[in-house]
Image (cartoon, rainbow, N blue to C red; front, side, top):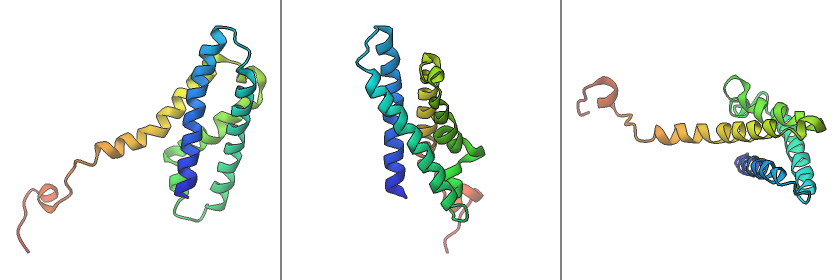
Length: 135
């Protein structure tokens, strides 16, 4: 599960970076990136289906909360939003790709940022109760 999560996050990170490069490349009317973009979009759509398959197989497992996230944010990010890329008009919208890329980057790294910011807290008896005595 950890290896899949690392691969999943890496591919979605690369898709976000690629979407930003794609938008910048289309500003200069370069057509050579069309094939790479088509491949990346299909890969993200396929990963959305794999995500749903894993989610369904883990419905009774403790990892369901990890897979769905708070308020279903991971399901929205990894499955629903990339499925809109099936439509070519939406796929070619530059603003949608930029917003999708920034949203994916936000979801991928906000939980890591929160975890890293909470590392410095002390969870000892003296900080919880305000006093401590030796046992």
